[in-house]
Picture 1: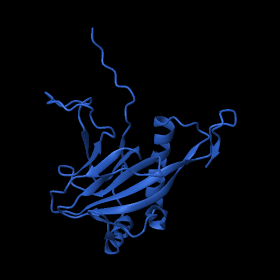
Picture 2: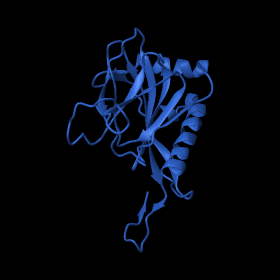
Picture 3: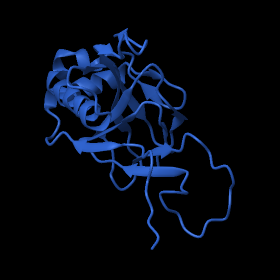
Picture 4: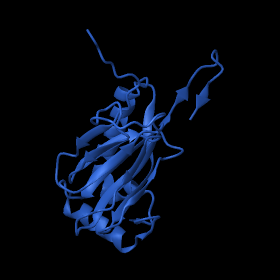
Length: 202
């Protein structure tokens, strides 16, 4: 009998805010677009702490709750630790634009909240951090050999992942402007111990 086990899996948390965006929130995002600045291959808000705005109070609470769930249930951090959002910004990807492949440094948990996308066209692409040692002609794609995993996204979806995970957005194919709110989060509290010579207070 042959048994397969997945060892050291990479966690990606997918959820939804469970409601529509309010008119105030949509107007806030529209204002971000009017003041957006060029990124490498798309545009982003000039403000890099958008979740701190009063208009974002409700969404910030939702995002913060999901960040803590990821920290406590996935990382399995002790309840004495807490997690906090360090930066947040809005990405605007126009028709035909993309978002280059990257990871988020100086961060532990990253994520995206989707403001305006089309489920049948838009996705978030994740890549293996370590390339295959030997490339063969595979018979079929499976979780063990695929170099990329695409997560289809819809309006109101919230996707969280380890900040070290490579990801990008492929060139958009619709006639719409893709809008997402991205964020980074870190841990705070006392890590390690004096006895293990790895105590760190953050």
